[in-house]
Length: 299
Ligand code: COA
Ligand code: MG
Image (cartoon, rainbow, N blue to C red; front, side):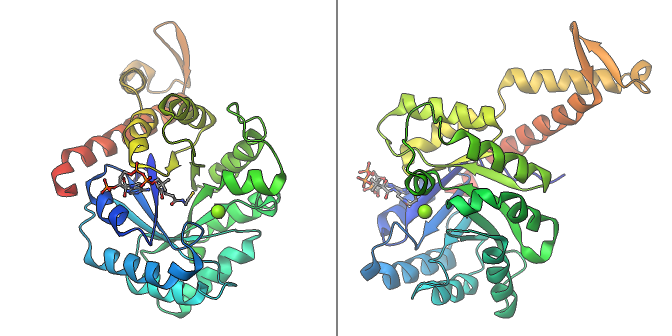
């Protein structure tokens, strides 16, 4: 089981060279270098050149590099895809996905222009149709040809499109998130929560990270460097979670429990499903530990 922690996934406008440079000193697990909505039309071509030059030059250590091109229907989309493919990022984000065809079209183009097999696709879930079609979109994850690895919730666009209000309890957003999470899990995909716009509000941000983690998100998309540290912390298994997981693993390892489906650990019922959960918790904690041990390689 190979686990890639994606706790903190930072967007940065491709036109912002300072941000592209700054990212080399930030402990984000993944970086989304954006050519789409954070870049003004007149800066699109310059942003594409910046981003591809940055990915090609490297210096991002173990951080996962993802490029978000403009949609293929736009004047920049095809050129963005070609340029992205030429630098073989870890993933390309398909923006404004409405149905499975939007993802398979990009997957086919990638195949046709000889994209590296290492380049996966992440689907932006940000249109009302993407929520209606989430099962069929997530199901693409079952066939490696489609390259789909991750769903990314675009909560700002979803709020806009649905005319819902952005309140702190996220009452309008939760059903979309929850539906997308079960779809992602059903087909073995990762899923990332939407951004928190008010980046000076550390308290509200922490509450929203906890909320996303409670729902089952693997991590959160971010917009500002100050959000990276707290996000990593909240999306990492806590010491208590890891030590409880280790107790469950040890209990099932005991010879007297080898053939039992259910046992008692510290007065609580524990089933083999908890063993599976516990093993995942430990694997994530170990992957995070391994990443932080090689932190010097990050800079
Ligand atoms: N990634 C990397 N570095 C970033 C960054 C980001 N997303 N946002 C800010 N920085 C850098 C700035 O360049 C600045 O670097 P410097 O110290 O070398 O000058 C430093 O962090 C401090 O930035 P700050 O002054 O606090 O913010 P700002 O006013 O420059 O920018 C935003 C605020 C919101 C415009 C900016 O954070 C941003 O563009 N975020 C990403 C938006 C985005 O990509 N949206 C699309 C997806 S929703
Ligand atoms: Mg968007």
